[in-house]
Structure formats: structure tokens, C-alpha cells
View 1 (cartoon, one colour):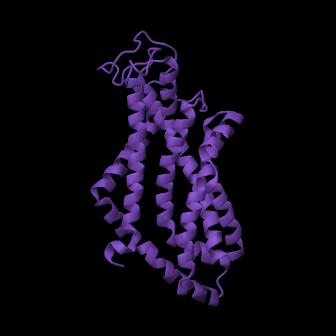
View 2 (cartoon, rainbow, N blue to C red):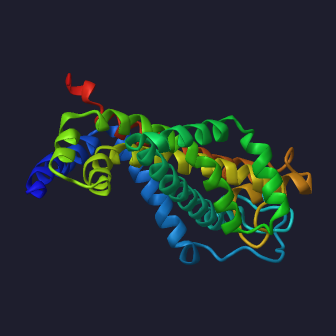
View 3 (tube, rainbow, N blue to C red):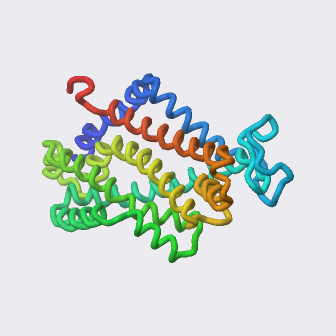
Length: 291
């Protein structure tokens, strides 16, 4: 008896998905940022087809950008364009995987805190403590202790990124929990699991999309910072590693191209992810249509 009522409550969420995405992509900044992110993904996936993985040494040492080397070369004669292309793969993998870890942990804790009052007291304290911790020094300490690799960096960044997601999901979840149809679902005998997954979760999906994009952009910055400090995976190219190599070789002042292009790649990716997330949040805001 309760199933039809719950289905009717979640139906508007599903039926509204297509118009939301249509309105979202009508915004120039939205489709431009999504296009940039799509190109970044294609660049990462097709890295072996675009450029040979950098390694060893070459005869063209510290050559400026030219038709032969689009982004110039470093002090070992390696092509910077190839380094940036292969670095895109590592940066995207860490950014996406770390944001998914943060999303799973943050969403679970946020939903449980929003619906179960006893859990809320504990979850709020843990979230506040995590938000108060000095994140960067702790990430540096952990990255220095464990064996540096792409996956250890991903876990470290993801574990420290979930509190912000949990706070967003909890705040929206509390609003949904207070809605009359949630009380109606309880009266009809719906279980707590069904209410959380069928009623509250669909209402916070838009926040989850925004959280993934924003958390991924911050994860890319964190990875670049840790790699620049020498705490990244020495066997994988990343944008932070390119910057580290420029700093270690002492050519930052004379070979400007070695720091410019990886820095621009970080800037473009972070800016595109941030704008995409902000525009999606705007399109889901009921106040946009006077609601």
C-alpha cells in the first residue's frame, strides 16, 4: 500500500531531470566548462595515442615552445607537452577517485545524521573536528609516512575531503526530513532504509553532483601541492611533478615554459570544474524561478 505513495513522491525528481539538464546546458558558461572537462577526459584516456610517455633524455635541452616541441623541453630534453598530457591522466584519476571517496563517506554520514537524531549528535561532532583539523600539514605527514603512490594519495585526499560534503548533505537532508510527505511515509509503514534511499537521497542528488565537481577540483590542487613537495608517485607523471622537476633543476627563471603550461592545465581544470558545479547549483536553486 505504501509503494504507490512513495513512488509518486519521487516521480517529480525523475521527470524533472531532463528539463534541468536542458536548462543547464543552455548556459554558455555551463556547456563551455562541461566541454573543457570532456576534452580533459579524452586527453587523459587517449594519452598513449597523443604523445609517447616521457622518459630518459633527449638532445633538445631547454628548448622553448616551437613547432617541434609545442610546450618546449626540460633540462633533460624531455617534451613538456607529453608530460602535461600524461600528467592529465594522473591528475584526473586522483581528482575523480578522491571526490568519489569523499562523496560516499560524506553522503552516508550526512544522510544518517539528517534522519537519525542519535547519529546526528556523533556525526556532527566528528565532522566539526575534521573541519577544524589543519588538513594540509596532516596530508603532508601521512603522505611522507606511507609509500607514495597514486592510490595512497587518492585515499589520503579523499578521507580529508568528506566533512564538507557531509555538512552540505546533512543541511539539505534536514530540510527534506521535515517535509510532510516524510511523515506520511512513516505512517504508511515505510522503513528507515526506504525513506532515506527513496525519499531523502533523490532530494540531495543535485548537491552530490556539485560536491563531486568541487571536491575533484580541490583534490587536483592537493595532489599538485603534494607532488610539488616531493610526496607524489615518482613513477607517474602529474602536473605537480612537472613543477617539482622545474624547481629541482633550478631552471624556473630561465625556462618559463616548464612551469607555465602545467600551471595553466591546473587552472583550466579547476576553473572548469568549479564553474560547472556552480552553474548546476544555480539551475537547481528554486529561487531562480521565484519558487
